[in-house]
Image (cartoon, rainbow, N blue to C red; front, side, top):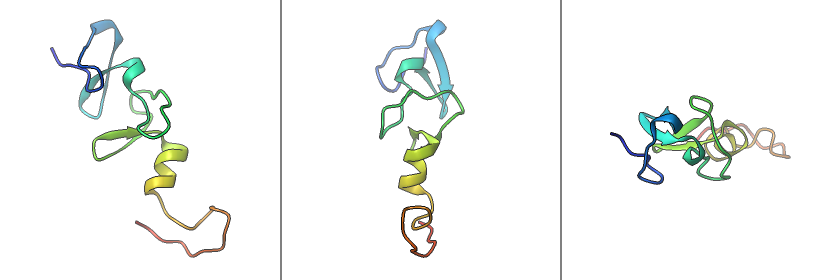
Length: 76
């Protein structure tokens, strides 16, 4: 049986599939802020889960726009 990437255990009743892996529901958390995520309700970068906003948007989204300044809009 597949194991949770965070704690190496999987119990069928607590299993959530995301990023091609089986997780415990409480183990599927944003890599940056620790917020518990829902299956399919998040983004991933380098096979790690992130909440869409604010973490993924701030770390990997467009830079400069909406960050309190008049910088030009750039993409990473």
